Amino acid sequence: MTIDLILFLILAVVAIATALGMLLSRNAVYSALFLVLNFATVAVFYLLLGAPFIALAQVTVYAGAIMVLFLFVIMLLGTEELPERKVLNWQKPMAILLALVLMAEGIYLIFVQKSAAGIVTNNPGADFGSPQAIGDMLFNKYLLPFEVTSILLLVAMVGAIVLTNNRKGGQG
Amino acid sequence: MDITSGVPVTYYVALSAILFIIGALGVLVRRNALIIFMSIELMLNAANLAFVAFGSVSDKLDGQIFVFFIMTIAAAEVAVGLALIVAIFRTKKSIDVDQINMLKG
Image (tube, rainbow over all chains, first blue to last red; front, side, top):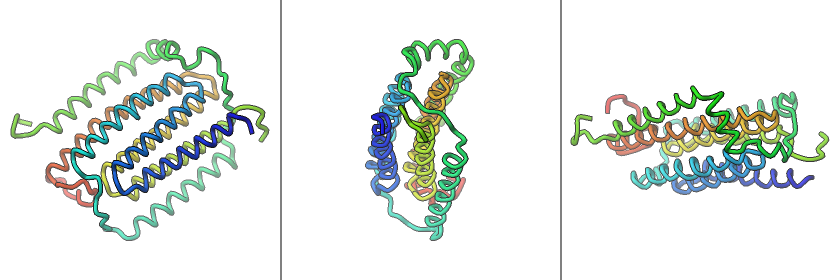
């Protein structure tokens, strides 16, 4: 057991526990807070994998901006807890069964057939994953996707404004 | 498996698969539209983890660039999706997905 492996196992337990907490919480605010912790754990994984820029983007974009938006909408709508009405009785057992089938397939592909191989070492080179290297690649090799992304963000912004526009004020 | 140093990428992929399955289960089991939406975010995040793990093992930065784009898409998706949920709540007074069964507002 190396120190890397011990660190990985502890973080993996935290990640899975927070994901299950998100799934099982009755209160939507608790779910959102569990998800923030899960995103923070994944950010630490990114640091272990030699991706410091992505790790900090994860903290600011996911754990910061997106989850704050979620909490804001939960509290705005006042729908922390919904009464659990069952429309389809067989839905929950069926979903759990299908998830177990998916997990069995995953275990077969990953551990029995070994479709992914290689070992993550902790020293991938000083420059690997630094903001400078990422920016270099983003503005040379992936320039067109980067520009398309900016248009996508503009469209999303206009869409959000149009959807939440109150029809009494303007023409919607 | 002979592990001298580091973590096999298999473990990262397995963790990513487990997180993805928990997210899929959340979409199937929960009825609150906001929690379904959070589960989708969890699945996107699991895919990101697999991207970075494979990128790190093959010593290429392309995986991290992909994660960067996925984060942008996720941010745009959250903005539009939450706006939709707010608009649905205004007309239906509920975000229970079982109640949303008509196209007419």
